[in-house]
Image (cartoon, rainbow, N blue to C red; front, side, top):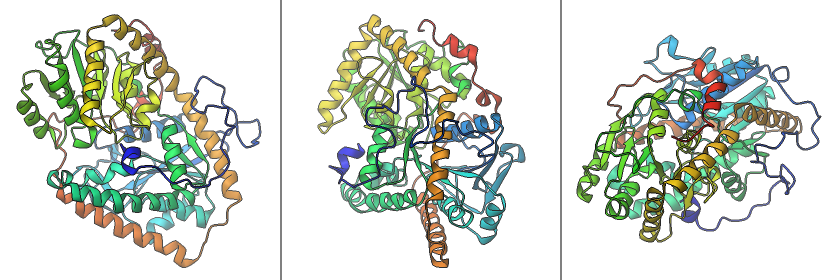
Length: 517
């Protein structure tokens, strides 16, 4: 876990709290009001008619929490009358209908380990093109150096820049490491002691050269404050995709050998940073021997799926762990609705979109406490279970398994958690509340930019572009070390302009408040 690995974070003085101490920012049922003495009128489309959205992709490669968030923002702001121009790396394989309209494509390098993802590169022509767009505000929905394009516009065009923290940097390095290096203690120690602090401080500098930072949880707000971020921080949880959570429930998709009442499931990319190995170990050692009917279904695909299958065989549970592969997002609710418990051990999430989806669909969640996005969503003992991941891993795994067994053998408690989870997720994930919080962040960013005087010298503008090009070239090279993600089922996922994302299904939301499946 990022906080346990880093130890005690140093204290760094920062600006006064964005809200008074007695106001809980994440209480989404409370009225939304402007802060810092802002006028009573809320900001809206007329205040920021043209939004620039800096994004890690133009063509949607496959669903992730970040890709959904970008689609959601573009669709919701367009729905309210904004012009939204998406800025991202060029995908040479993309068809015109795969791209958002309008958009600006930057020259790019491929990320071999994640086919369909590209890293943008800066050029003078592209920067001039962005300046000509005359954005009223820029949202940096990116974890790459593309954020420097926003800083460039902020300096040269006086455009307010709002950054969004989309990646857990303290675990991001492991995504690029091959299996052998990932399990090398010396390599891990080197990365934790030198690489992670370097990347974190580079991000702090970028964020402090913006006009506000949006994070997805209170834990991440504390994380970045402790690292030295001084600009206003706004905590805005993600909404959910109506195509997932308001879809009709289809026929039972689970194998016949997975009896109802003891079905554990997890939906995610099959990569080691999602904690699947830990879930398999817990199931094999602490759940399967106690609950004879218990099964584990791991929905999704990825480069590490073969190693997870091998782990199941070594643990003797290959006949009780199922790998149905990747499924269309429209079928995800069917899986959630026919499952009995959602288990999650990832400690690398900024949010954990699948946790929110499972809860919204009435599936209780047992998860490791990451002190960040996942922990933000679960109120332990009321709408799910949140368990300490360490520092004694064996003891933590045993406790996790015991809690799961307790729920599998107590259907009434499971139903109670499911109902509470559904109510909490529906309140938290309301699209209108999320967008209203963005408007508050926009208004505060405009005032912050008006009071700032960034360095506009040639050196100050050129140096970040050089570092940007060098960093992305290096990352593209490192991505060659790990085998590429595979998607065996060949699913074609929703792209930009999907109307199921544009507008929440009110009737579907009402259905979701009914009796738990």
